[in-house]
Length: 87
Image (spheres, rainbow, N blue to C red):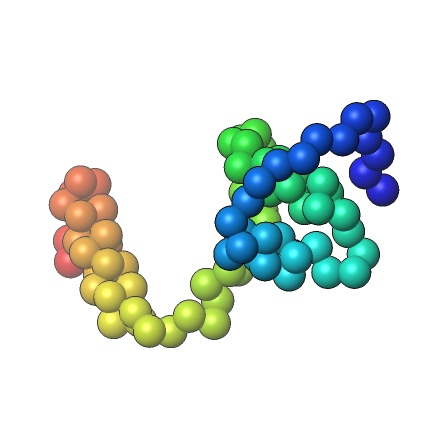
C-alpha cells in the first residue's frame, strides 16, 4: 500500500481524471496509479531478465510470415556471400 506523509491538491482535466479513475479501480489510490505511471516511464536497466519479458511476444503474430521468409532467405544469401559458401 502506498503511504504518504503530506498531501497536495492538483488540477487535472476531466479526461485525465476519468482515465486515472479507470486505472485506479477499487484497489488502488490515485497516488499509487500516478506513482506506477512515473515508475513505468523510467528507462529499464538492460538485463537479461528485462529482455526475457518480451520472449515469445510475437509467437502468435502471423501477418508478416512472407516478410519473415524473405528476410531469412536474404540473411542466408548474405551469410553465404560473407563466408564463401555456395548457394
